[in-house]
Image (cartoon, rainbow, N blue to C red; front, side, top):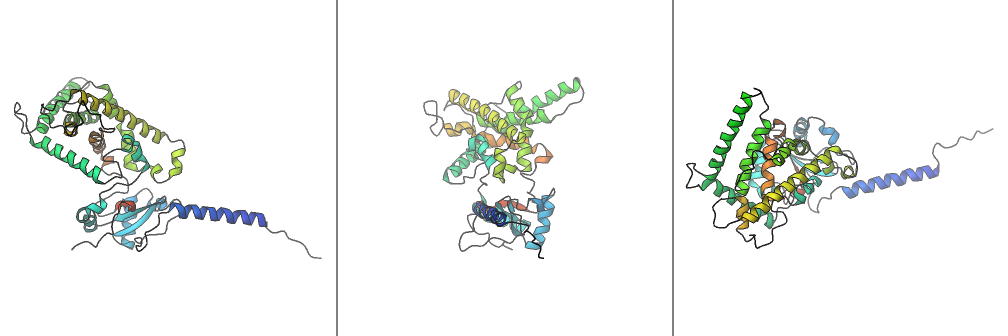
Length: 352
C-alpha cells in the first residue's frame, strides 16, 4: 500500500512566489541608477536590496567608512537606499576632488528635503549648478566682498561689516550684563544666534532685525528642528516611500521652512518698498535690485535665496552637533561622501 504525501507547496503557490520575486527584482533594477556605457562603478561592498549599506554604516558611519576605505581604497561606492554614493578618503583624494576638479563636484544632490527649502529655489540647497546658479553666486560674492571692504564715511569702522558687528556686540554685552544682574545665570545660545542673525540681516537688507522681534526669536528657538534633520540625514531623501508615511520630524521640518520663507519674503518686500538706488548700503538685496528689479519692476519669485543660507549656517554651526552636514561626512582622514549623481566626469588620480 502506497501512502500519498502531499507536496509542501502547490503549483499555484510556487507560481505566485516566483511572480513576487520577479516583481521585486524588477523594482530594484528599475530604481538602481544605471552606469553609462563605457564607464564602470568604483569598487565597493555588496549591499542589501532597497536598504543598501545602511546597516553596514550603523551608528558610527565615519568608522565604518574608514574600515571600508582600507579594503576598497580611497575611492569607493556605497548605496544609501537605492542612491549610489561616492566615498572619498584621504586628504590628497579629497583635495583632488574638491580643489583640482572642483567644477566636477560643485553641484548638490537632488534630495527631496531640498525641495522643501524655499520651495526648492534655494541657492544653497539646490541641485542646479548651471549658468543661472553661477551668476547668482558671483553676485552674492561681489556684494559680500563690497560689504567687507566699503566703509561708511560717518563711522570710525573700517567697513560696513565691522560697523554692524561692533554695534551688535555692544548690544549683546549689554543684554548679558542685564541678565547677570537679574537671575545671575542664563543660556547664551539663543542670544548669540539672534545677534549673528541680526548682523546677517544687516548685510542682506541694510538693517538688523529689532531686538524685540518675536518672529525672529521664534525662528531661532525652533531652528533645532532644521538642524537636527539636516545634520543627521533625512531618511525621506533615500527612501521615497517614507514621504507618504506619518513623520512628526518631517512635518516640523516643513513647518519651520514655511515660517522662515514667509519671514524672508516679508523682509524682501519691505526692501522693495524702501529701495533707493542713490542711498549707500552695500546690501546683498540691493545688489540684485540694482540689476533692474526696482519698485517699478516685478520682483523675482524667490529673491529671499540670497539670505536663506546665512541664518541656517549660523543656527547650525552654533552647536557642536552640527559641525558636519551629515553623519557620513568626515574630513579627518575618514571619508567624504558625495552622491555620484554630482559627478560630471571621472575622478583623476591625485597629483603627488
